[in-house]
Length: 135
Image (tube, rainbow, N blue to C red; front, side):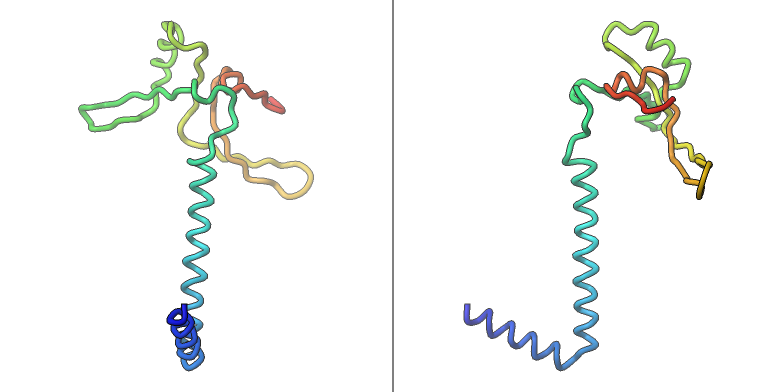
């Protein structure tokens, strides 16, 4: 413990002697801590904490692949989705969404807001066990 105290006193003396270096060192530590906190918070929100949908362990995503083009995990084509829903004997419910988002402007009284959205089939919200507020 005494060696640690001596090292800390030496570090403080050196930082006082070179204030420019001290400022750069403190800034680097602050940026590193901030970036680490941001990344962990994002990881925790997106990966470690499950989404709040009832029966989440029973929800699956279905995708197609094109081995000839070395592509996997691409979305299901609309005609294939129709065939899947008509021939379905496995899933309780099925719904689809487009993979890319659609931006829209919400106007009215005040400043317009930029909104991001997805195109989904009518069964999407009931499948997740939620009710939309409007629409």
